Amino acid sequence: MTFRVSGRAFELDRQSVEHSVGTVLPAPISEHYVVVSGRRFPPKQVLSCATGLDRADFTTHQARRILQRLGFVAARVSETPAPELGREGEGPHDGRQAAALDPYGGKWVALGAPEEVLVAAETPQEVLAWLERHDRRATCGMFRVPETAAEAAGLAPL
Amino acid sequence: MRFDFLELPGGASALTRPVVPVQIEDLDAAPQLCLVDTGSTANRFGSWLAEAVGIDLTGAPEERIAVGGLPTTARHGRAALTVAGVRYDAPVSFCDPWPFAFNLLGQEGFLRFFRVTICAADFWLEVEPERAG
Image (tube, rainbow over the protein chains, first blue to last red):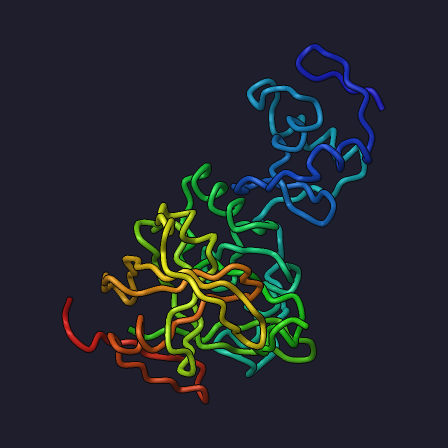
């Protein structure tokens, strides 16, 4: 599909957008986000990656509208219902922390709160760079989420 | 200071591990979650951390050891660690490779300096310095 952004025409499709953020770490989300390849990004970050434009060249609403037309789910943080992922009585957070970490097996993560993953990446260096770049702190620590139940239980990889 | 166990996804139910956030040198933006390991004689950290905080291990004594059945090269150095608000100078073995999820806090670089109470029934551990400084 062809879109006009900041006076220029861009040919975009879902695959090219997904590819453009394939190795990019999501920036912090303040209000709006879009889901690309299972990850939440600020809409302006995605459109900037896909077009090469500066984020100041368009608005969040423009970015949202374009990405929605390409079939990406867009939402507001405040619209997100509280997840009911906890498993009663299975830890200090009733399983909610385990549920929050579940998608990140094998990844390095920084926790802003017990159930808040600020960033997840393949390497610890990427996590440190992200924290530095966005002036954030992993208040609840940084570590690599075990990839398997055996590893989580403390067993060494074979 | 009391810390909750960390919940980890582990299939049908969450697994919980006794971990403590440890600031390495001045890396205050990213305290590392370290597993309290009473069976370890020393602190064992991934060697990437030494590089990340600028600890030069050139010429440091090294040895081949096995951790959890896995062979690795440990280079012995020292690092300023901050645990439970206490900063102290500790011996650390920086290991490569280090494929484990956590760094390990062991006897010489941690348990000698802190009194640790573990309550696995209620998923917490308490860490108090043995002596100031």
